[in-house]
Image 1 (tube, protein in one colour):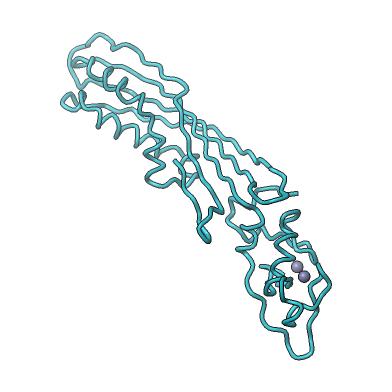
Image 2: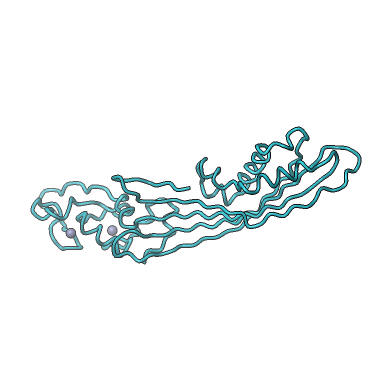
Length: 242
Ligand SMILES: [Zn+2]
Ligand SMILES: [Zn+2]
């Protein structure tokens, strides 16, 4: 499952969610013990890992940031006899379980991504087990899943999206661009260097081209060292670009 944040037709941020079944264990149905609804207990364990990778910009080092967490949720589903044979109902149970797991909710998945992490190979096996249940018998299944979410982004370009056009210079005052040491606002100086832009937070201004080159090396303001990543999506802030 891949989705992209777009700007000028090329991706700034790519997102990919992958899921795999690590483990499926089922216990055979118990002997029926005097009636009652047959019961299938499904327990799901989930390992969630997030990867954030800054890449794609020229001259950038590739940095992986890894955050892992494991969590477990379980739900005992007592499945009525008439729906036991139905794989859709097993799928519904799995969806319920997945949505009850907090590290997965923390990933902020889209509907498509939720569907993509539903372990398809597990559904028919659970349905088979459910079909084998007699009145009053019980069975249990443990499903272990690994979900990896990868985010990859072009650091300088993402940082540039946090900057906005600098207001025009006031009469007779132009502090200049502290990267190239030339005046900021005068037409001649701006030619070839792009319009002046202002950084989020500190509002220090630089030529667009100068600050964009700078961002390939550092995500901070050249003047005050304010961290520009703090003004991005919180998920990207955790990246170390040094
Ligand atoms: Zn400059
Ligand atoms: Zn600054």
